Image (tube, rainbow, N blue to C red):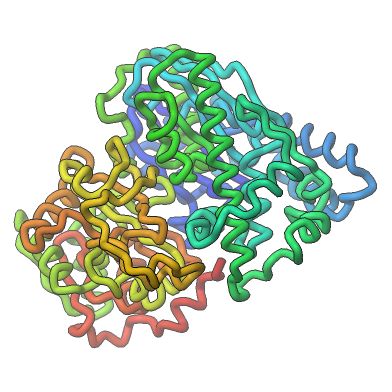
Length: 609
């Protein structure tokens, strides 16, 4: 037996992943255990979980891999600070203590958390870890690989080829020229938090007009036909300062960056739309170039930019590749998995047999809870619940509740690895209800009203609702709602602008149709998600609709729930109507327990972002 642990840590979204004889046994982000969103600290609890899942201790591990090379990253930081000195001293002074105390001594830090481990540590490059996480679990024997993110050591993008059980990256774009950092700069400028608010910028984009595209291309970057570019760094501050953009950016866009939590204006919507279109154009040019250079039909994507599912959808529909597979944990968390896979295949020269679906097991790689532990918890807080008999599926009861217009917390099986809830830790609703999007945003998720919700659709019925062109089991593709589902709009609806567009019903499934008639789609198949697939089938039988709303089981500022206790407290502190914990069903109107937290007490635990 060969056991390999992969770790990502110390920047954002720390995580751990465990392979045993090449099989992915477990993977999880640290935030799910600590309840600190995007937790960057050493993933001690995630490691402990992964080892416990396999019944191993640290002494049983054969290799431990860390997802990048800290010394090479430190070299980049020093060179950047020296290039801008004395400007940037505050940033330098803030960064150095952590590097000198911790980040330059990773073997020591990892041994502290792995008592008994005495073997080798392996440090692949950051984009190698991303590439490995994309190619090795994919269903392809051979594929082009493209990684796009903020920055690793020096690389900000790379491409190459994977064949069999080996991969090679041949080209890269280097810091400070970065698509991820460009997008994050606009995330900052529009008032959202960097490294967590980029998806808000993407969701805001359809409310605006692309009026600044020319301005961005003329002033901020020199874009080449192959997708490479150089940024005009005089507009940015991330090399030397504590902010992402500088005074020239404010002058270019007619005013300073929006303050967090302040009102959104049409300017922010137009900026969001413009940088989204520029980002999509860069992604398309890059993939076309990679296709020309490799001549391959399959593409694997990873890196934080690969979470831009609008761009991904365009790559699939308009790009030259026949098939695209995207790592579900495409950001830094997935680097832990990539580091472990790289050791198994590339370092140990172990063969690989691609699974026709993929080898990520639906990304259900986190903890699960049995009936006895759930029952014990519910009894401890004096909750009122119905326990369905063993063998009686819960999907029928859940579908009944959804068909009645109830909002249902759905907690089934293993927790998902990656940022998306895929039917393991989800909040579900009826997409036909015109008020459901607003209700779930404002009364359950406590988040901005403009944010769209994703649909889960039976894979066999997806073409009846969405034009995505391929299965999308990991909710990483955006595509149009098909014409047959759309509603005829009157002149007033067609002329609506900005957030007024939110009030316009656009399809027969309005709660999951964004204002540009698109949706971020999850297709659900029986092989990856049997219980969730059964729920969708039962909901369709009752209503004629093969789609449900699927949003992550959390409130704004909180990580997705991991345990029954977290699910119950979230349920009680929001306007959720029902909770299905494996085979236990709870209705809000039946709960009288004094042990449930007050809403304000519960929400105060989480810093809003």
